[in-house]
Structure formats: structure tokens, C-alpha cells
Image: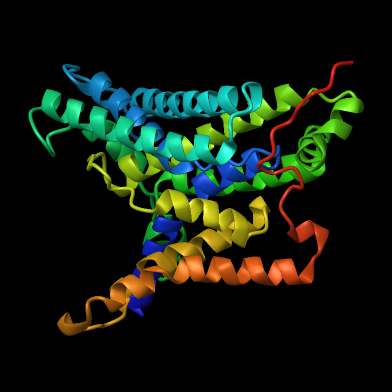
Length: 328
């Protein structure tokens, strides 16, 4: 029983990092923009948040946890939004190919994170010497009392505040997309920007806002990984393929934020499943096969939804296509 509880805990922790990226990508793709730069943007958000907390606590004899969290949060969201703005200028205004731009942004963001991660490590006195003790403790603080409840407590209440914030964001985003006029306008742009433009909707504004805010949400996934999961410790290339799993999760949940919460926990469990399957020292290569499971599951869902051909299960019709506005 204890092994199962630990597995569920770790699956949720892994899933939250992926969920932030997926929510950001869902919001972006609903406008018709395919941002494959999410993995790099998560790096940018993670290192920006860590730098903000580190510079605040450095040489500060009495740092405040709330201020440290606020600074790191704003730094992560703003830096990730800048990444989204770069993508928006290139793909919306200049109409550069979205796939190429996204891949370039992933490479840039990864290098950005590793460069500044190494820089602040040197500033702190070496690898592993970055101290954000006060801010980091605020991110990892558990719900007092509730986390001690047998069975239920460790599974539901044994996480930092960013875990619950992520679930709230998923619910709010789902309500926004499917229950508000602005959400309807955004989905209309993703389906047919020309028709939406003719109806008086400002296509360019919606595309810019959704892409930048979506990037900001993805950046919070990087912040969560560094400050909560890694406890304020930076390691180059430590994010692994979580950013790509976030993009896969978007397809798996057929672009629905409300479905992405539980699905992200499933992906988190599949992501670490290889650690719980005994392979023996003679067959370590099998672990690499187990790591492929989330992607295989995504491909199966993609094939099934394509066969069913239901419109609500398909991606936005204009996804990945540049919008050329005619003269009026």
C-alpha cells in the first residue's frame, strides 16, 4: 500500500510540471498557433524564477518568503511571456513557419536556461551552491494538518501551493474557452480567422494575447520544476522531455483543459513507470522502451480520434497556418 501511495504522489508531482506546459499550449493552439517552443519556454521560466529568488535572497539578511515567491513568480511568467512574444512577432506579424520557429525557440530556451543557470552557479560559488532557502521552503510547504490524514492526506494534501494553483488554472481556462464570449472568439479564430475577422474580431490581438499568456503558463511549469520538484537546485538539461510530453498531452486530451488534469497524472505515472518495473542489470535497455509509453498512448489516441472524425475531437482547423489579412 505504501508503495502505491508513493507512486501516486510521484505521478502527481511529475504530472503538474507537464500540465502547466499543456495548459499553455492549449491556450496557444486554440488561436491557431502551434508553438513547439514550449520545452524551451519552460526552461526560460524556470531559470528566470530561480534567478529572481536568488538575487532577492543574496546578501539579504532577512528575506521574506512571500516577497521571494512573488518576485520569482513574476520573473518566471514575464520571461516566458517574452519567449511567447518573440514567437508571436515571428509567426503572426512576419508569418515565419511556425514549426521551424517553435523548434528554434526550444533550442534557444534550453541554451538560455543552461547559460544563466551556469552563471548564477558561479556567482553563488559553484554548482549546487545556489541558495533560495526561504523562497524554496514557501514553494514546498504542505497544507498543515490535512497532509497528516492517513492515506487521503499523502495523496491529496501533500503538495506545494503550485500544484493546487495548476488545477485551478485548468478549471478557469476550461470555463474561459467554453463559457465566455472571449473564449468563443478565440476558438473561432482558431477555426477560421478570416471569418472571425470579417465578424469584427481583432484576430491579431487575440493571437498575440493567447500565445503570450500561454507561454507564461508554460513558464510556470519550469518554475514549478525548479522551485518545488528540485527544491531550488538548478541542473543543466534537467527538464528532460517533459516539455514534449506537455505537447503530447494536448493531443491526448483533445484540446480540453478539464480533461488534462487527470490525464497529466496518468502521463506522470507513465513517465516514471520504468522505475517500478524490475528489469535486472542485464536488461537495462528495456527501461528506454518503457519511457516510450506516454508517446505510444498519444499516438493511439490520435489514430482513434482521426478514425472517429468527430469535429470536437479534432485540432483547430487553422492550426499551424499563418493568417494573411486581406486589404479592406
